[in-house]
Amino acid sequence: MKPTALVAGNWKMNGLASSQAELEALGNYLRDGDTADCGVLICPPFTLVASFAANAPEGVAIGAQDCHTNKSGAHTGDISAEMLRDAGAAFIIVGHSERRADHGEDSALVCAKAEAVLAEGLTAIVCVGETEAERDAGKTLDIVLGQVAASVPAESTPENTVVAYEPVWAIGTGRTPTVEDVAEVHTAIRGALVERFGEAGNGFRILYGGSVKPSNASELMAADNVNGALVGGASLKAADFNGIIDAYRK
Ligand SMILES: O=C[C@H](O)COP(=O)(O)O
Image (cartoon, rainbow, N blue to C red; front, top):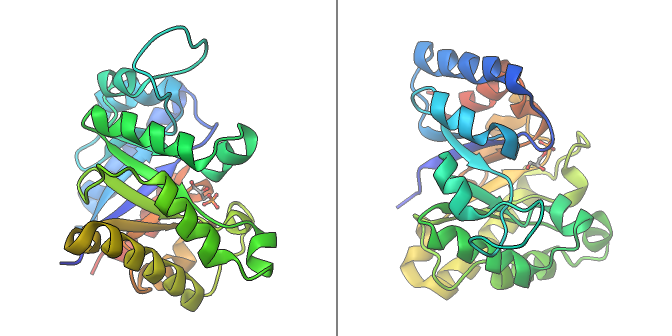
């Protein structure tokens, strides 16, 4: 069965207390607009998770952008999945390429973080994606499938894990792969999930991320095995994010 899509916003290092107004505006769009056939998620920075979760409008789940592998302890500056669950997060993104690049996170660490998310009963959004050099070298599928194999925990199910394919070169650049290229990678990820998890592999949501905006969302979301979007820049303004959610309105 085709999974229910998810449109997720990753606010990255953006957002102040005043950003609550965008969350409220998003809630108004969802309430006043046609029903969208997808889940909606906002992942603000850590500082806003608790207040957003406490004030989330109907139909908007709140998540976080990273977590530590441990529950608690002497890890200055880190946040655990347990703390994020306690703050009201339902999802946690792990393995975003910005963390892989900026913090040297490899797939083994990403997998351990995802396991920590699952242990709290939350849903992990596991990010994978090739760099431009890797794509140019014809290594896209090798890299992406390697990351999927090493980053997605053995305990993953369609309910507790989402995979997000984000070509690194498409993030924040305004460039996107062709719909055919997106479909090729997503279909390969689907095949790998089915090979590993059997029929359940068909139930995992596979999100596309990288320069998704209202003007390209419909065609990208229609690609084979695309079950939603992970949106950066265009998730910061409710009007833009709502324009992406439109891809799931009849
Ligand atoms: O997590 C979101 C992605 O990195 C995409 O970011 P972007 O929509 O700004 O390209």
